[in-house]
Length: 191
Image (tube, rainbow, N blue to C red; front, side, top):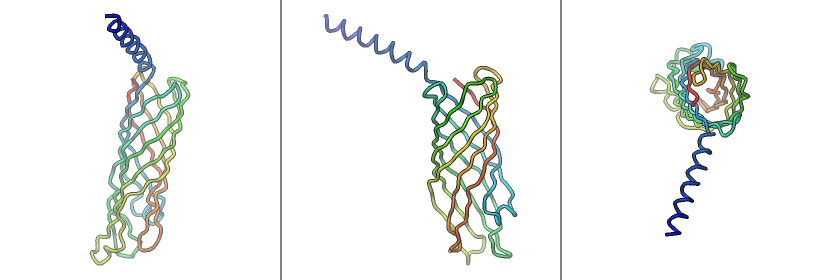
């Protein structure tokens, strides 16, 4: 009987300790939309920029330190292939993991972050005879970013973010940088 009481007491104290530990952990989720631009000037002339979307989720490990994950999707569509009279289709999407820092200066909260992304890309020429010159694969790269959150309420914010990652692939034997900058705006919740 004494061991049952000790077990119950231990479980009660463990639940209390776990509850207070988990109450200190905060979560954030958001959905961002924006534009992405390419670093490769030849692509940039024909497409300029394209729509990108990014759902994101973070957990705060302390008041100022967070880590999280995001997905980036969107469609670049037709791009200048670098060969007169030829065009190609380019798609880039990926999963990102990051860590960051933000000081609490509500209602305006700046932040910075850095991490890694695994991006899938497909660069295919419209002309079937040029199929061998395309690129298709997945590559991991470093990313950096930063932004500003404006809290409308204690739990709801609007955000603006800048992200950059270099993503170089080979096409026609030439290194092509299809990474670039993302400028995003969105809405999120802080729980």
